[in-house]
Amino acid sequence: MWFKAYHAFGHGKSMDTSNYVSSFEAQTCKACGLCVKRCPMEVITLEASDKATNKKGKIAVLQEEACIGCGVCAYKCPTDSITLVERKQRDEPPADIKDYVGRFIKDFTDPLPRRKV
Image (tube, rainbow, N blue to C red; front, side, top):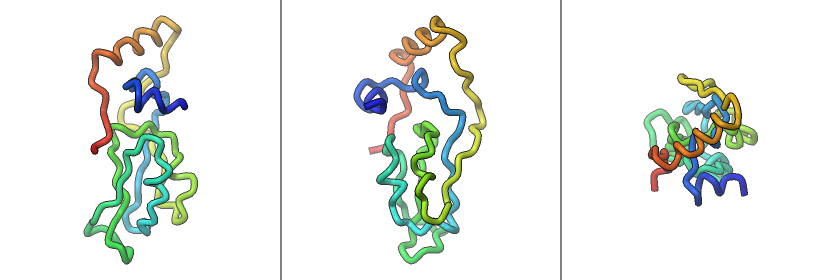
């Protein structure tokens, strides 16, 4: 239900509290697709790649700008090919309720990174 704010209502950064993003290791990815199925933001795909060392010739690819850094994809990765790394730019949490409401309202005027369809 919590992710409905992203998908149905279009809220973005005011709801995003993680300063982490998923990072994928192409050489160990076996393209099983578990991360694709588990991602609540639906921003991971399997794509053909020269970097793939598995029989499928594919690796997991992330739309980093839309990743919320929850780590759900990494939790059950059978090859430990996914880790969470700190984002290059950190977002500090709201200082108080006034700051939070200001960020929440700003969501309606700023474009939200969307998953590619």
